Length: 256
Image (cartoon, rainbow, N blue to C red; front, side, top):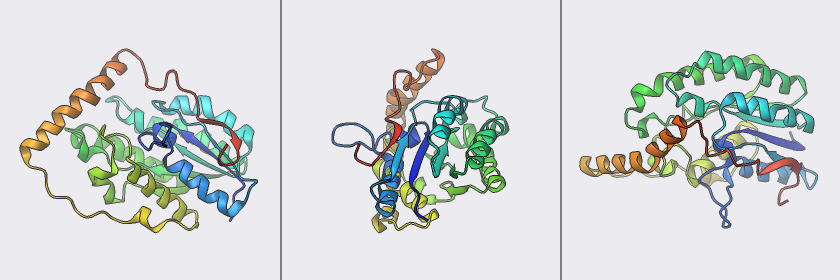
């Protein structure tokens, strides 16, 4: 099937953080998917990316759903909830309940919808298996059921153990590296039945284990450089996306 338009909704995962173009702006898996879809669709293909870093699921729905529906796209990706799940009081069931009307509205408008079971970040975060993994698992299971109820494409990144490799992640351990974004794009294009660059899906060699002392030093630097600033913003009610606008707010051909 050749989709004529694609709108990406979400947060930093979809904005493409940590996969930089030469000018410092972000590319990410959604741009890669759009570029490949445009090859099949031709010059009339339109792409919009409404995602903004730091957005919680409720704000994604409140701010991005109506603009997405107004564009009447053939294909929409909806990826939100990752920022919510990092918060200790997150309620996975409530998040799914908040997302469901949005997915239903997109489907009712005739759009094919892409949903995600998010990759497992817990192995990379000190204490993550205890503090984050249970909420993330419950949310991912809810997304799986949501996709089934509404006939959405489900991209199951959680089942891909390659994302346990550190090279799939940026230094902050929360955002994908360039290699991680390409692997996500490969999964999406495969699910859509579109050809994919084979190297995007190559599994890298298993790295040598990091000595314990070096690993603890890396954990300390991560906490200093990334965790502490995140906690500070959270306590102050601030977000990295407070002054950011969507990078592609309207449907436009690739390259514009």
